[in-house]
Length: 316
Image 1 (tube, rainbow, N blue to C red):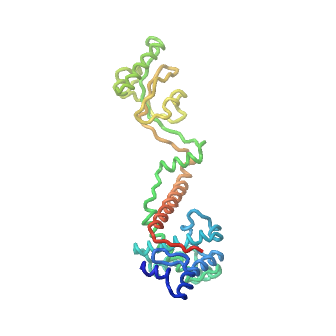
Image 2 (tube, helix red, strand yellow):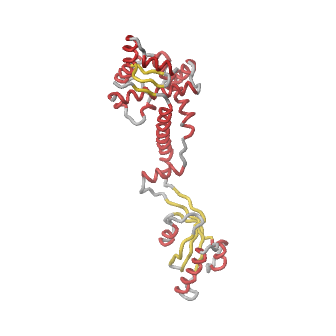
Image 3 (cartoon, rainbow, N blue to C red):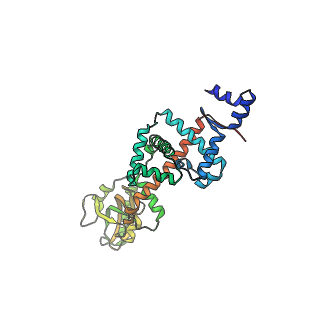
């Protein structure tokens, strides 16, 4: 096949040199793009013909209408997609295409004949629409296999995007807290604070919070592990709020003063509580992030395939 391509490019006869060389705009693997292909494509987009938005990565439809380089890149990407469809044996039959067309007509409460007339009203023949649908179905199957099935958007990604877009949202956190309490009634505030600092130093030195709570907490309602309860953002005192903000589960604070004494706080568990608006927005944001991820992965994929392909563009 390479010999065939070379023969096209270096044909010795005057007729072969004049017509094929002047007519060939690009070679993509074993496919050629002729000047007539480019002219037909330009005429197609000039008349608002059907194009595959998948191949508009990095450009706008208006750019495709006026930029010859964008037009050629579109046609090259088409050839690469089509060669991958052939390689992976993803071609579909006319029966499959007709089934899809019938479904489209049904969804629009039309008969096939009415759909045909509607297409003609837009300057599109049914045979052109069949070819467009065949190509679309095949490319969707290719994208599902190569890209869509690999797109992953986690709940954390969606929440991060929500908080980025709505930084003043009422999202907060729910903390499960434990504490070690030091009572200022035992020896006065300074002595209580000193006891708290000594225990805080032991925690920092590697001793376990739970064991130290059992030994040193002066909470008359002490429960195992120093459990304090579950609190949402806004339900704690400002001192507690500041102390636990930024702590991860398992981490403990320094000495925290309160109106009743001194505490060392431990975050047992922490979870984000989004505001009600997030529940309304999350699936839309997930779709936006999925589409963005798809576009990025497709662009990388098509660039990689293009790098691996034999592509020659004839200048002029």
